[in-house]
Image (cartoon, one colour):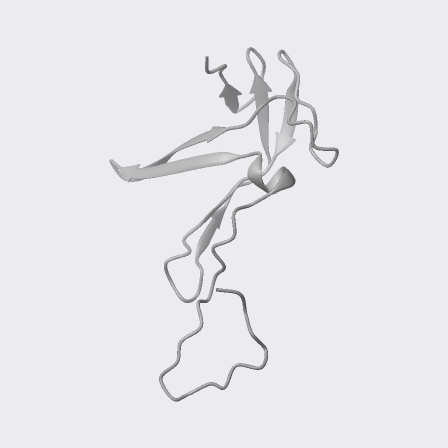
Length: 104
């Protein structure tokens, strides 16, 4: 339900910490799923090369892009996260540490 600044709070009432809004615009352009196993994380990140959003970079097959990645654990109060050193993402073939593949 929408936040009501005039709500009369009672002892024991709880407010949801994170919203459940559906992302829009560039925030909705990425889909990421992660699994942990064998001592490490495997992430599947999907995004269109050209999302159509003016604040997204249009990616091109055969090119390499500098990126940084962070994995957040939103299930703890301190919101732990792991951050990468600078990486290179190649689309298709290239010299990147991460190589993207086309999903059909």
